[in-house]
Image 1 (cartoon, rainbow, N blue to C red):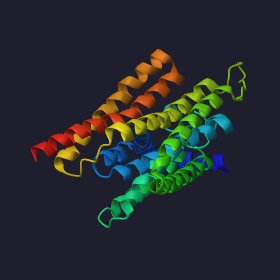
Image 2 (cartoon, rainbow, N blue to C red; image 1 turned 60 degrees about the vertical axis):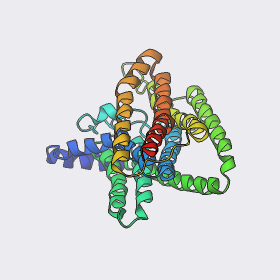
Image 3 (tube, rainbow, N blue to C red; image 1 turned 90 degrees about the vertical axis):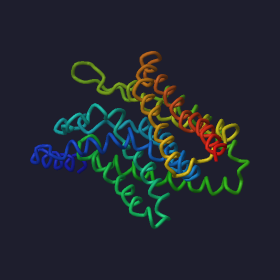
Length: 319
């Protein structure tokens, strides 16, 4: 049934001469490349705690998703059935195993978290609706492009919802018991280390094709897992630094605050564009992606907030 659904979408796509394919590719690309900048901007500029809530839900997904992917080891649809032909360049971005959808479990906590955050204000409720709708749109784009089955995206959405709920419960608990945060950070870091060890030592399918080559190389499948877990490790390190020494305050949604925070997003893009491939080339895909993710998360959780402290102090002195 799942393959038949993808074949039906494929026939529809071909009948439309791929008219909707560029849009669906853009949705998928935006979900995993630029969407994170929105809660990061919110964290810096508007509301530190609410921005952090969305990011924490995202990090939960970044640990859960690769754990499930590398445990279940489900092949991509076109490997399971040669009739499935992914659209456009979607196959080049469909890395790792198929189940669950990483694009969906990225969009879920980021867009869903922003939706939850903005829903409470009548002025931003319309924007919350857009964020909520972006989650199923991302999920559908993965089906439409032929790179994920309905089960993949359904579980991706489920993981996202669970992560949003878990993050909300954690924030409620830490509001009452703030002294427990260090313990949670330490436990989280240990879990990340154990996850990396698990990825390295667990057995993987080693099926060969007719030419005697691996159908799927487990080493390549682990790449995203190392990068995703590195995001949580970077957050833990960055949060430990920020809460002890930085202790920044959001700039406020004013002209100067918006400008400085928008400028802060530029290094995020530059790091992803240039530092990531450099580290992968130097250290290999596993450790290069892991180190990049740690550096990247530390930048927006702690390093740029330290810059915001300088900015806030300067503005206060002039006032």
